[in-house]
Length: 123
Image (tube, rainbow, N blue to C red; front, side, top):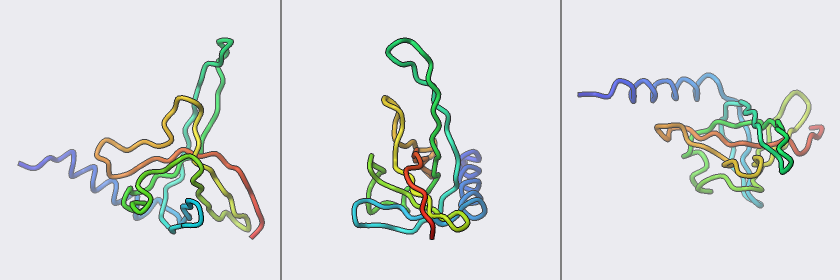
């Protein structure tokens, strides 16, 4: 008997990858790979040492794990570049302290990489 939910998730992931992505460049050190990613965001609320609630936001890149298999998983210091209009935006893999840098979906068909914008340059 087939698993309808698993099949549906696979189909939905294929639709995301086919219709909701843009080309970006994933970089580690001097190496890089061009991949397709869906852009998203995550809002974090973290309590500081004084008990104040701080809010921050990451820009997320949702990709297929196999697209960066050569690098295994994202690491702090990795960067992702995307072109928006006449600008090259560079994001660094980042999250607030205590939060994972990335997360897999339940079926491990996609990975959400959390980043922050670190540079904006003209083309």
